[in-house]
Image (tube, rainbow, N blue to C red; front, side, top):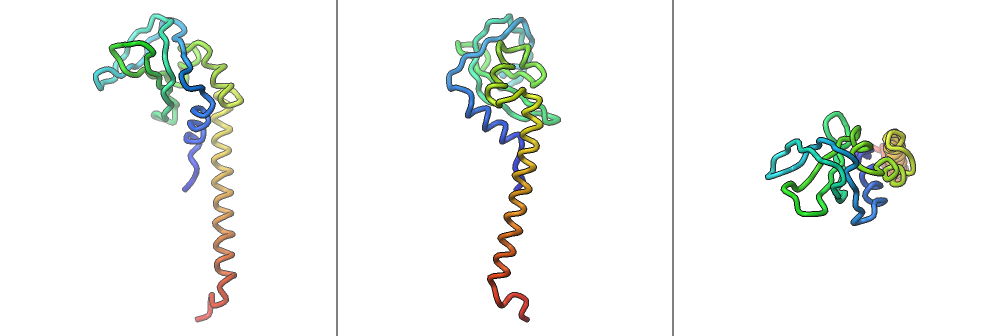
Length: 143
């Protein structure tokens, strides 16, 4: 099975984001919220506090960052697209750069290359294992 660059990125983001870290909405922004099991657009005034919940891959491979409210709210989750996160969340660019060790755009390319490298290494290991298996079997090819 070929390594998925998104899963590698997701793992590192979770591993390098402190549990309970509070994020703030930067300025007035419209975002998608999950409310009563339905996704809706909602206006945020800025200053709302959120906890990072996760990241998922949306249509076209775009990242969707998911947050939950710190305080009671009439919605359970808010989502920001990869293109919006830098303007929507205070310090998002610095947070992502710290989590990945590089800016998000560079990280996407890095994780894609890393996944290709891991897939190539796995293919080489599988080939070596096959070679070892057949070379160790002295009856191989003896009809």
